[in-house]
Length: 439
Picture 1 (spheres, one colour):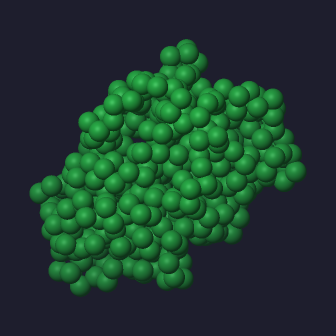
Picture 2 (cartoon, rainbow, N blue to C red; picture 1 turned 45 degrees about the vertical axis):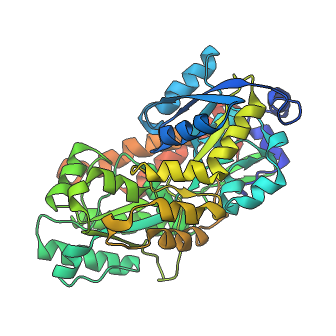
């Protein structure tokens, strides 16, 4: 799918009439016409509260009340959806790129095109702008990008003379070497509960799961790129070369603390996660490009967040001004990263040096991780796009991956799990009255 969507895709996203109504609700009036307002904002990304505090300390015409909610997949999205249905949603919410099309199709967020200026879009990573542009309209302000990165225990790799893998073939060799060096240790983890990590790897490999043709959706999860990824990880699971802990669970955390897991296939924001989760391992970790299939730079995005205005908001103009400040103000990024909790990689190119200076690199032995993020972000394939039923896709994948990676070797295959996710998505799209090609 072209991430910008075509006009016909607007019809697929809930109907031209509904979207026209949303646009009309998007607010009106010139900048500054709303006067002093108080905005409510729900989110969960690390350092957000500190950024909001910085905003409130320097702005008189707008004040923001921030409420931290669970991450989207941990209940945050359900909370947002329920509040929208009840008519008491906040003005602004954090929404990850994969989920934004679904919120748009449900009419949960406002069309903010009148307030997203060409000047603002020029400041942001083009791939991020494309992922928030649906049907030629703007639905959120990109905050960060989340290119993939591989974090590894530098002390372990050095001590056992294991080369940091730059290709997926080398990653498998490193996985075997890690297990030989310490039978309990593994090079990384396949997260059965987190389809976004798998999707990022399919993205990196060149897959494009969602597309539109005419007035129909087209889903393709059996393409060569996806099959390559499923076959590869099926082999790692079969041979016991990776752990299968639930992401960010006590089991995963304890495995990292004990040295039984010596690598983490994460994203740019993962640098802050490790730093906050394993403070006692400062100086032991380093970061490298995520392995690619041919050794050339290539990355997908693992998550990444935007700030959207809900349909309940009566202050769309002020809300977008605040969202723009979050994404483009040096004070906002500095407050967020200096909190010590965040390694956010701003979608705004001009703010990356600010984030780099604010991030304490001592945990990574002085390594400039933001230089690594720069290269990874530049290698993200901009052709990937998300569909309007991602929650259905990912819920099914989570259930099926759990079976494959279950105790005792699991059942089924990753290829079958991905097919099940596609089938469930097709059923959901048809349930919504949308056309699906060839299925």
